[in-house]
Amino acid sequence: MRLRRRHSLSKLNCLSVRYGLAVSLDKFDLATFKKKIAMTDSSKQVADSFANIAPTRDFSRTDYHVHFLYHWTGHDFHATIEYYRGAEKPRRGDRGPFAEEIVAWLGQFVKNDRATAQVNAAFAYSAKKWT
Image 1 (spheres, rainbow, N blue to C red):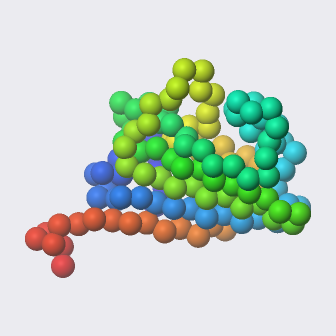
Image 2 (cartoon, rainbow, N blue to C red):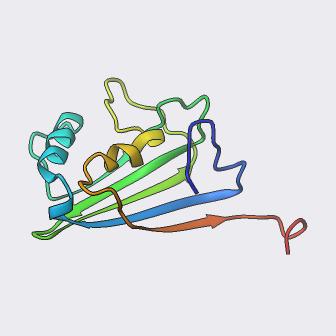
């Protein structure tokens, strides 16, 4: 499932979608990632692990927000991107990354043309309509 602008989790009867990504540091631009995170995070030092809620840029057209978690070790970078129903309004001065673009934003740091992620999704359907 690829979530794009104007897509709606609720129209898909989707409660949540979770992407789990792990990539070795030789295939991930950690230095540039740290710089970008420092620009978006209010803390001055970038920690080796972090959790954040990515708000919805255009909450009039998008009905989800994202929980973004990451950490790295001496060898690997790990990220979890969890889409949840319900738009989250950005705070004043919020510079992103935003829910609608977070996968592409994270993808800019992967240094090879392929990355593998584990994807889990939860859907809710009426028992009267679906068996």
